[in-house]
Length: 599
Image 1 (tube, rainbow, N blue to C red):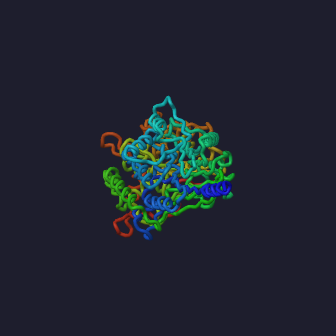
Image 2: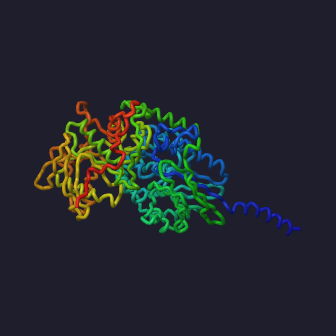
Image 3: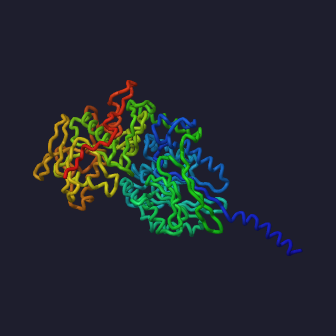
């Protein structure tokens, strides 16, 4: 009898134990949202409260609908994670320091974990710390994560960020317990991401591989059943179409990671990517997809069960509370940023029936958008500054969006040139001007001819000059001639003689002009350029090179790239007489008149 009772007891206990041996873990993930609260397309088309009536991709209200629906429909463990660069890309970012809106909105949407990417450091560590403090002062935010930061105890520039780490608001690791499982998260900022985050200093970042091994060991000691790496490092495809990149190398070199949630490279991984048994997932960019990663934990082991991208389109009705929150913030953007400039959030400023783009991951050489932006800057500086400029330039890496057929509003134009800030209340890098000799100009252009080979973001577009070059010749010997096109349309040849001290002015955003200072590094020490003011004095502080766009007013009235572009396209002809200018059709195809190959 005792044996029978014991057997029945063991059977009764075995039922629940067996049921608990297999657990499904669903991780919903996004990356590189870049503050695209109203989606990816002309914002005037976005209608999140209804379905079947727009072509917009993304939008936070629709993302919220997916996150909440998945959590309702999956009774097992479901977590929502963002892999960084959630800020920087639209006018909404400009009010973050004051209102701390987006992180609170992401918590409201259902995000559990949000990681910091390189663009969170675009205004420096003090500003991202200020944004986080503003957010937590007004409500709840998701858990914030960035593991491989190295702060400097001797530098006050990162003190506010250090305090956030010390208080646990920003974490180096995160353990979430659900249904008896301990799920450990750590995050990385990769090498390429660090390289394009110069304003993160004095914060630096530990190397990925060795640091990841350390974090895996630490989370294992913490008793984690599952270890997830959220890596803002990226993947890409090689010439043979195979996946490569920093996160692929990470998976090959580090054992003990159960999944890598990737970001930074804006890559949409549609099919499962498994490297050394580790799934790597990424959704693309701007919230056009929500990723769904499924893992199974059974008998102490975790295995990949599948991944997919859920399109965020207008087949999905947005969540009403998120729609209302975004609209309220949109009114603040109008009142505090656009209205003082004589602009409105929803009023069209131009229209087009052709696509203008500059695809950094594709054939950026054939861009029609890059040359138009360079022309816009060139005209803007020459209209608003008495000294004007000889040459305007813009790099692929600062062109963040495209112009699609349809109506454009001011927010659509801002998204194209959305990076940076100056010393006023208007978002965007200020336009600056430096002077160089003819010989220095030739050397700069020689380097920029090949700079894109190390990184596509270094490729530049120009206005105000014509260059003839021979691509078959050696380093620093390719350029045959440079002509400067004056305001009167007359071309003048540039002398390359070291004895000719004639100065030529270059205008670009303030970040771009700092690029001149690293020409020596890119040329392996062969050349050195000394940026000058109009009197020929070396420029030490780049802030002194900011152009005053209204010399009659007191102080420096900054000009911005996006305002230059907006003014340029707004001045174009209204071909169809609907009171909205059309973009000039000369930009309907690639414009490459500034560089001509000769052999």
